[in-house]
Image (cartoon, rainbow, N blue to C red):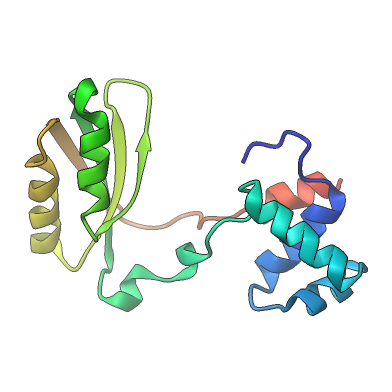
Length: 158
């Protein structure tokens, strides 16, 4: 969610606490932020409704599930089949997320795999989707900066 003024300083403090203590109860969040439980609960509900508070699934390590390899597959697609391609990609369990991007390719697909042979199979499955014209696969060699949101939350508090 782009910063458009919908997340105020109190919301940012709640989200920062939640990012640092994801298992915190509403009461614990309220105490840490210095607001009532009811206020915390209503703000959390509003943040969820407006899309500021998303799933915490990204905290689950694919490697812990037997998928130590991560790769990005770029794809060129037939534009009129974009919705069908997206639906087919959503049916591939190893696809973590798909972004529509600008430039010479249309999609950035993040996938995980058990090993090189598994990655080859997944890339082939993606290439076989009707509407996918061309793909290119780049293996992630090392994660240099993990997903993070706390620097943006701290900036909101300044």
